[in-house]
Image (cartoon, rainbow, N blue to C red; front, side, top):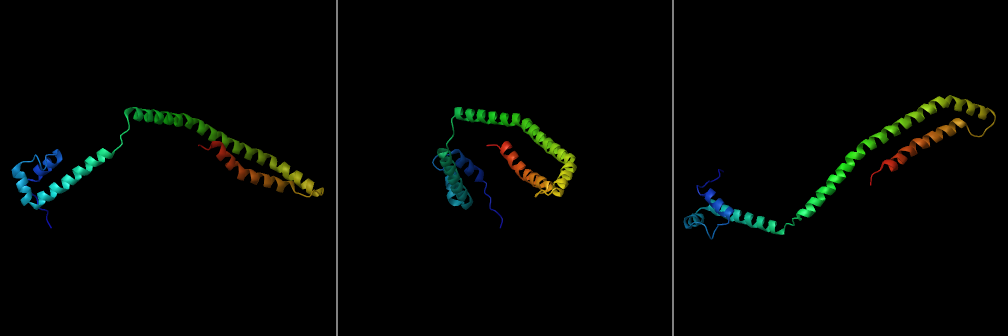
Amino acid sequence: MTPHTCQFEEQVLAAVASGDWPDRADQALRAHVTECATCADLAMVGGLLKDDHAAAVAESNVPSSGQVWWRAQVRARAEAQRAAARPIFIAQAVAAAALVGLIAAVVSWVWPKISAAGGLLHAAGAPADLGTVAWLAIGAWVILAPVALYFVFARE
């Protein structure tokens, strides 16, 4: 189906858009719209769209310029705070990673001594193996450390 075009469509659309339709429109254009189905549909739909636009503009709640300015200032301050806090957060994350590395290095350095002491305690009749206790402490630390870091670095 090919769309039917009319030479008066632009004039009808211009009259509807300017608010001249139908009261202040040219008499010949109004007569043409009564005869042409395409232009009649265009005038009807254009009028409905114009009325809908006018209703939307009437219902809109535009804030005052002072309120817009205040919101922009608050947003700018919040963005500046986030930008200033970013390097500090990165430094804290690097420090936490260095601490984890340091603890791992100390544990690997001390572990042979702990194992030897645990063997001596077990040979002496101690009820608990010191190596097992050390593994349990390390496991608890591995589980609780991320939770503690979360609460330290958590934002509001």
